[in-house]
Length: 500
Image (cartoon, rainbow, N blue to C red; front, side, top):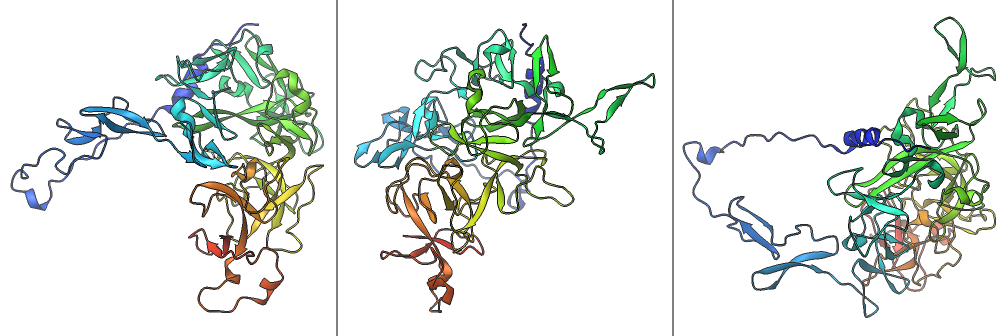
């Protein structure tokens, strides 16, 4: 089976990553100098900061180091007279000096930090990525450092910079045919790539229904009737499974019986964030609320989700539970959000992704809850997995909601008790605390994430007023153990605080 050409990929990505030049605007001399030149002023007359030197030609302060960025966890310093170098900022946790890239404490141990919405994290200084609190070498479609001897791609993969250019490498699996790639990928001349990069024929699509239980058929030029018409569908929908051979994508599902799941394949880049390409993943055999994994290789069908489901990584690592797919795009007038969840469920944007076309965002259905409600504050088990009511926003925009509304998040195998260190601050990656608590470092001078109870600020008035009578009976409304209900957000109308 012959590998595909790279030309279509380079063309597509050139459109995505090419920035438009900015035309400079001429500056007005200003009222003080209309009749002549301004008074002479020395370059960098205000002085330069530590780690900077004055560029007399540019007349501005610049980094004194040969690498002007110095990475996320280092800064430019003068290590000896006239000599500047990028020096690591080392963090301490529990009296122990942490490794480069580890900038916080998690469950009492040094840990790295990762952005909830972008590709960057503190392990970039090592050419690595933060996973489960540890800096690890890059893997599939993650940015890598070409030629690195310490942060290498996995065996059988290469750090290839032909895709993005400019020295920006990503880990690509080497291949000679599709059987060596993950499901939903195509073997190209530089390695396995998301199928969608190769044009509309490789997109998620479905046959068009005619409203009478049949399919809309194509009209041929000679007046005859052709095969069923297909249309592209967005993430979260089911799609037609295809095989890739001889440079073509061939539908293998029966007409009108699309069994695949339209999901995402992400490129993760440190500076540019995450770039999603929609791909049609053939179904696995794991059903609703059964354990799954993010591995989409050919030999892991048993841990891939069945039709209409998506694997939400609510357990440690890349494991999670299969949940019903939905459209997490914010509502728009005249636009129906399909597929939708049940009335008592929220569509959780667990990728915290925003569709640039405002079309559809892959989400997962989870039960709604409210930490201040006696009726809706308790979560039933998700299959055999216990769940916690976490006051986090389903849209992924706010980690802590303003009013106590939340969603039932499946718990990790082990959860911490109130006030004890916890190991996952992103609620969408699984609950590590009990209902009505957040795993957060708020109020902890050592940045140690702990299970912290939430509370209702209106039940602890600071203006001398009287708290509502319902505060005496509503769960999680007030603090115990000598804690004070403390405001942690300046958002207008927010009344959820932390017991600190």
